[in-house]
Amino acid sequence: MADETSIFIGASRKPDDSYQRAEELLLRYGNRHGLVTGATGTGKTVSLQVLAEGFSNAGVPVFCADIKGDLSGISMMGEAKDFLVKRAEQVKLDPYRFQEFPVIFWDLFGEQGHPIRATISEMGPLLLSRLMNLTEAQEGVMNIAFRIADEEGLLLLDLKDLQALLANIAERADELSARYGNVTKPSVGAIQRTLLVLESQGAANFFGEPALRIADIMRTTRDGRGAISVLAADKLMMNPRLYATFLLWLMSELFEELPEVGDLDQPKLVFFFDEAHLLFEDAPKVLIDRVEQVVRLIRSKGVGVYFVTQNPLDIPEKVLAQLGNRVQHALRAYTPREQQAVRTAAETFRPNPDFDCATAITQLATGEALVSMLEDKGVPAMVQRTLIRPPSSRLGPITPDERRKIVAESPVAGQYDQVVDRESAFEMLQKKAKEAQDAEAQAQQQNRGGSRWTIPGFDDVLGTGNRRSSNRQTVAEAAIKSVVRSVGSSVGRAIVRGILGSLARGR
Image 1 (cartoon, rainbow, N blue to C red):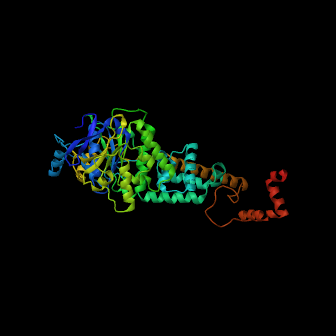
Image 2 (tube, rainbow, N blue to C red):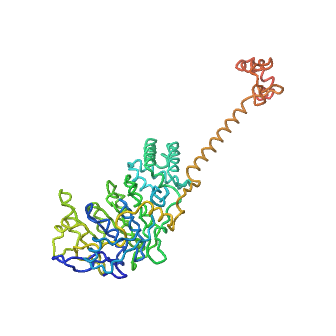
Image 3 (cartoon, rainbow, N blue to C red):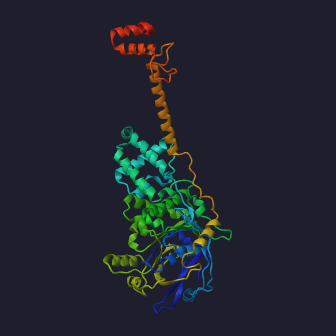
């Protein structure tokens, strides 16, 4: 059985299907990352739940996405059902205790949990370009926009800030092209249209303040357990690019903010990335390189990243090579690609002479998996056919009333509910435009005042005095207007010079 230095995952089986030994994840290697794969309905969510429970009980905070809503049950105490009790006996989990775990619910849309926000500046041009699926030329314009924002002190907090900055760039396209390279109005317009699409998909809820504080997903309770942050992602999955971009942003923020700590007795945070294939689908090489860099280096920050997906082929080889702890549920091999996935999964394990790994992957039952965790000195253990232990918390989703109660009693309740809209690029650019407009109007007024003539003793016929409400002209007004009309002739010029004197002398 596992002790305080490990997490009990399940029990491996001998060739005759009898009990062999307990399979454990050593906490000191929890930051060496991991992979949970398998076809739909094979038990990946339960494996994720078991791992999250184990890390929480060890005092390690956890962040995970709840794609189907099933993972929310981790916040409630489990119930003694026959099939759970039977599985506990099969893996020799004695005593089998039920628990509820400290959970903080989050939701980018603020409906099923506390709102999560990030600022445009924090997201950066690379991730925004990925989110918006921009072309290379449009991505160049986005980089220029961020450069201008930095140079001119413009805060980019929400979508309207970015929209205002892009409009300003379009007006200054010729000037900026001379400084930064080609900035075309069509490229700016294409980005603006994409922003409108993002806004209609709900992305406006994500960008803004107050931004998520990393410390709030790294909480522990008074009894020493790690808080489990559960992101409601059922609605978010309607926009999978936003989902993948958000989780990559969160990993990047962890990488940027956390200090180097080296190897610890246990991780400081564990991050589960469900539906991980969304991160890599149609991703440009620069983004995949960024993910590989973050995964490789974030280990030294004490963070473990666990990818959860159906197919090991969903993960690029460079990233796959970084994942030391592995749980492989059943895969189906009906198509050539599925057969290739089975071979790939089998080849990544340290072979076991007791069975053929590729054959076993296609024959695993629900709740059964091939497991290989890192042993002493970080060496992968020989792969074992393993029954996964039953979770201690509830299997399945919680009710809306239960969720509302947990959200209301959360340690971050009230901290993220209200949007803060402080002065940023939108307001600053509006202010500059207003000042420029006022200056132009004042200059025009001065020009009008300097070129029009006022004659003492007459109403404001040519100048800026008091004007009568009547539209009828007096005899004097008619005479003066006649003089003005005749200015173009030599006689008219002589009359005006005679009246204004100085003008005649100025000539």
